[in-house]
Length: 94
Image 1 (tube, rainbow, N blue to C red):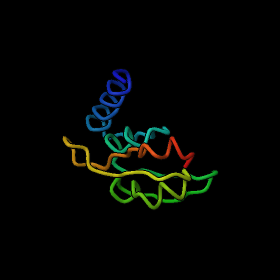
Image 2: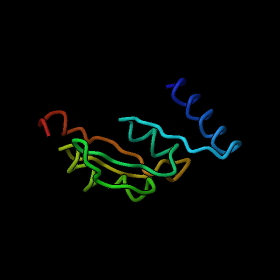
Image 3: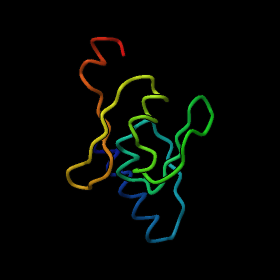
Protein backbone atom coordinates (compact mmCIF):
# COMPACT_ATOMS: atom_id res chain seq x y z
CA UNK A 1 0.00 0.00 0.00
CA UNK A 2 2.83 2.39 0.79
CA UNK A 3 4.22 1.92 -2.72
CA UNK A 4 0.83 2.71 -4.27
CA UNK A 5 0.56 5.93 -2.28
CA UNK A 6 4.12 6.95 -3.14
CA UNK A 7 3.69 6.27 -6.86
CA UNK A 8 0.36 8.08 -7.03
CA UNK A 9 1.76 11.04 -5.10
CA UNK A 10 4.67 11.30 -7.54
CA UNK A 11 2.29 11.10 -10.51
CA UNK A 12 0.07 13.84 -9.08
CA UNK A 13 3.09 16.05 -8.40
CA UNK A 14 4.49 15.53 -11.93
CA UNK A 15 1.07 16.17 -13.45
CA UNK A 16 0.76 19.48 -11.62
CA UNK A 17 4.37 20.66 -12.06
CA UNK A 18 4.66 19.78 -15.74
CA UNK A 19 1.02 20.08 -16.85
CA UNK A 20 1.00 16.44 -17.94
CA UNK A 21 -1.83 14.07 -18.68
CA UNK A 22 -1.33 10.85 -16.72
CA UNK A 23 -3.18 7.66 -17.61
CA UNK A 24 -3.42 5.15 -14.75
CA UNK A 25 -4.83 1.66 -15.34
CA UNK A 26 -6.03 0.00 -12.15
CA UNK A 27 -8.69 -2.33 -10.75
CA UNK A 28 -8.45 -0.55 -7.38
CA UNK A 29 -11.55 1.65 -7.31
CA UNK A 30 -10.61 3.31 -4.04
CA UNK A 31 -7.16 4.23 -5.32
CA UNK A 32 -8.44 5.79 -8.54
CA UNK A 33 -11.23 7.59 -6.68
CA UNK A 34 -8.68 9.31 -4.44
CA UNK A 35 -6.03 10.16 -7.04
CA UNK A 36 -7.71 10.53 -10.43
CA UNK A 37 -9.56 13.59 -11.72
CA UNK A 38 -11.52 11.47 -14.21
CA UNK A 39 -12.33 7.76 -14.41
CA UNK A 40 -13.17 5.61 -17.41
CA UNK A 41 -14.99 2.44 -16.27
CA UNK A 42 -14.89 -0.53 -18.63
CA UNK A 43 -16.92 -3.73 -18.67
CA UNK A 44 -15.71 -6.46 -21.03
CA UNK A 45 -13.89 -3.87 -23.14
CA UNK A 46 -16.86 -1.50 -23.42
CA UNK A 47 -17.03 1.95 -21.88
CA UNK A 48 -19.69 2.01 -19.16
CA UNK A 49 -19.11 5.49 -17.78
CA UNK A 50 -16.61 8.36 -17.95
CA UNK A 51 -16.46 11.22 -15.48
CA UNK A 52 -15.31 12.53 -12.14
CA UNK A 53 -15.12 10.01 -9.27
CA UNK A 54 -18.50 11.22 -7.96
CA UNK A 55 -20.07 10.53 -11.35
CA UNK A 56 -18.56 7.08 -11.93
CA UNK A 57 -18.32 5.55 -8.44
CA UNK A 58 -22.07 4.96 -8.05
CA UNK A 59 -23.53 1.84 -6.37
CA UNK A 60 -25.90 1.01 -9.23
CA UNK A 61 -23.17 1.27 -11.86
CA UNK A 62 -20.65 -0.79 -9.89
CA UNK A 63 -23.23 -3.45 -8.99
CA UNK A 64 -24.07 -3.88 -12.67
CA UNK A 65 -20.43 -4.07 -13.76
CA UNK A 66 -19.12 -6.26 -10.92
CA UNK A 67 -22.23 -8.36 -10.23
CA UNK A 68 -22.31 -7.79 -6.47
CA UNK A 69 -23.70 -5.31 -3.98
CA UNK A 70 -21.39 -2.50 -2.95
CA UNK A 71 -21.54 0.24 -0.37
CA UNK A 72 -20.37 3.65 -1.51
CA UNK A 73 -19.71 6.25 1.16
CA UNK A 74 -17.30 9.16 1.56
CA UNK A 75 -13.66 8.99 2.54
CA UNK A 76 -13.42 10.81 5.91
CA UNK A 77 -10.42 12.94 4.87
CA UNK A 78 -11.10 13.74 1.21
CA UNK A 79 -14.87 13.43 0.92
CA UNK A 80 -14.40 11.43 -2.28
CA UNK A 81 -16.29 8.17 -2.96
CA UNK A 82 -15.10 5.03 -1.17
CA UNK A 83 -16.23 1.49 -2.08
CA UNK A 84 -16.77 -1.32 0.42
CA UNK A 85 -18.20 -4.81 -0.02
CA UNK A 86 -20.92 -5.68 2.51
CA UNK A 87 -20.11 -8.73 4.61
CA UNK A 88 -23.03 -10.80 3.29
CA UNK A 89 -21.53 -10.73 -0.23
CA UNK A 90 -18.89 -13.17 0.99
CA UNK A 91 -21.31 -15.55 2.73
CA UNK A 92 -24.05 -15.58 0.09
CA UNK A 93 -21.81 -15.67 -2.96
CA UNK A 94 -23.34 -12.38 -4.14
